[in-house]
Amino acid sequence: MSTGLSTTFIPLIRSVLLRCREFENYRALRAVFVTDDLRPFRIGLREADNPGALVDMNLEYLLEQRLKGGRPVFPIFVAALRDHYEQGDAMREDLEDLLSQVQAAMSRSVSPPAAPMHNQKLFDLLLILDFGEQVRLAKQVIQSQPVAAFLVHGEPECGQRLLATRLARLSPGWQTAQLLTIDAGSNGTGKSSRSLWRQVACKLGTPTTTAPTEIAEKVCAWLQTQDVIFIFQTVDYMPPLLLLEWMRDFWQSLAARARAHISTVQSKTHLLLFMVDYTGCVCDWNIPLDRQFDPNAYIGMPLHLPPATRFTPDVISFWLDLADVLPTGLSTQALTESCDNGKPQLVYDRICTHCGVSWEGDLARWLL
Image (cartoon, rainbow, N blue to C red; front, side):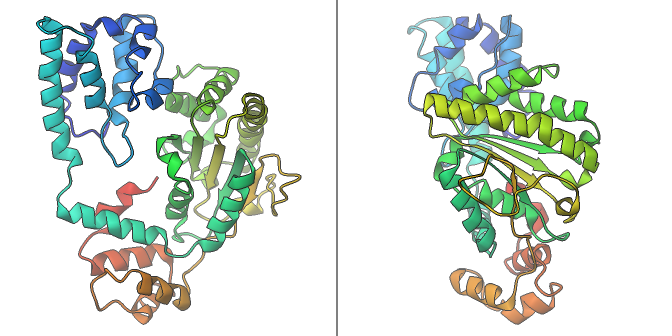
């Protein structure tokens, strides 16, 4: 839980919330989320049978949510809770005290000093370093299809993770999307279907035993008001037969259901899947992929995007002209020759070093 709150502070928050009547049941909790700021997050609330479970299942979710611009949602929620109680009520005073402590703690973590602000600008600049071909194709698909999937791939160290991050930011409206990232290479997740389903259920905030049909129902419920974006990292770690089975049982089934649902409710939301291959091997497996986009025949199968490749000198030179806020002294020749002929991962690292920051330590944390 990356919130800026110490672990010793969480039990205090929990004890205060447990005494709020709004946590007596799920319906009462949802009734708090009626303001313009809170309403978009109501759909992500988890149901539970008792106050303790209701607090535990929703506290982490609320602490992690942000408004556009990065403003944390949790203090807004606590303020809304406080306003449900009259002046002089002890519960209102306790919530007022909690709000002050939460705001002080979170302000220390979300109000960055000057250097991180520069880092964010540098990261945004790196996001637009090439990959124009992949971005243009993805935009074309997404503009015409409510449900779409893509294979992001290339040779090792060619910037696949940054490309996936850029694609997941194509629409400004996706800042409030339900974004679910699952790493198939983490702790052996991608070695069994059972582990994959458990991870999906966890990301949706449902019990790990949730059936696939219930998972589809939860996703479709989100799609009534929000975009839903799945990012499956390290799919090259999965055995080919398991990936084939997973695409059939998870994605094809979910995509078909979502397309029918979006058509029925006439929603303008999207369900998207980005599969990220870090070694460039998946496109050679016997996996059903769309090699070309035909808007009249497309049914949501993963589209084989052009591979992420080394940056050419022309691409680097064009980007350096755009990034005129960088310290002087960085040349196209230096970035090409010292970075294995423009290998993206090495280029990012060299640019960051030139700017006095660390790619892995400072900027890569914003990658999905």
